[in-house]
Length: 443
Ligand SMILES: *Cc1c(COP(=O)(O)O)cnc(C)c1O
Image (cartoon, rainbow, N blue to C red):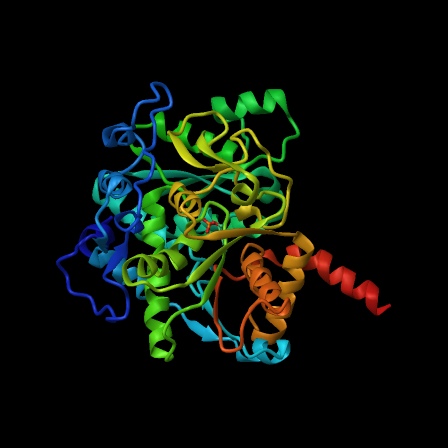
């Protein structure tokens, strides 16, 4: 705890943070041409009041959730942690361009350089910081493929908090390294649904062999936090404050493109589960479209197995299975939809961030759905050209971009930016199907 008091939480201390680490998060809410529909109280269906979120979230985070300010200052202690891997690289994918024999300029913004291996620490560090500052002792959360759980466990370790994670059963079984990663950071990880919560026991009664889902794991983590007066809950995506935290990605990318001599990005591809890495990369570009008349197109790439925006309805729905979260207006497949068990566990979410959903409903961004085989083929193509093995989630953005270029839709000289949200080094078994297919073909 000494570390927390003397080092991590003290904004007054001067740390040498490189000036290229953003100083503010960007809030697209300030630039939306029409306001978003408010979150609703699930019981009364009245507009949710900020204080109704206080049992679960830190006050600073709740303030961010409701904020309409365009710029929100990043605390110095958070910037100091960011500085150990930020700014993350924006790389011109020249070898991929060569392999595709294209005159399209392909860039990727690579979030896999974070210690946990994905973009998730951008919000995990902020959430752990604000909670520690307000005296929270423990954070509970859900995780799909395990990247969020691992990122939050890391952030909790940095700020002296306990961390308890409910991991979707199918991923818990398929990706044991993630549990080990969480435990290495000092966190605890249970497969969900579990017998530790009422929500979990109820689900198991109805379906003892369920693969689990993010919606179920959220119900469990929320229940544990609500029943404890020393714990808060942390959500890895979907909510407005998480979208804000991730905008460091796009703010850096705009600056880096400028340094590379590009006037603007023509098309940005990002994968979308709950929407946070897509929002993080694309919202600063959308802000420039709305304020400065730029024309960057944004394409959200979803799995065909869980196409919330491409095939869902835009309406109020719960964020979890048990109906404990506020009602949020979003694209949804229904809160009781259990997506098939695909490798990109981080994209198995029935809903979509209300901010990303609002942007889609206003026509500010497009969405497409990509098949699983196509995503891993694209991931291998990317790896063989650029060396990075993308996370199964990130391969959706790669597949979206490759398909756009290969089908001849892109002009020569067009600037395409791929959001590479994480690396796949702990998810290599997910590639095995595709590799086995290649082995068979060689025989
Ligand atoms: C969690 C995760 C995602 C999906 O979540 P979003 O909130 O939609 O970004 C995508 N990529 C990686 C690497 C992830 O860990």
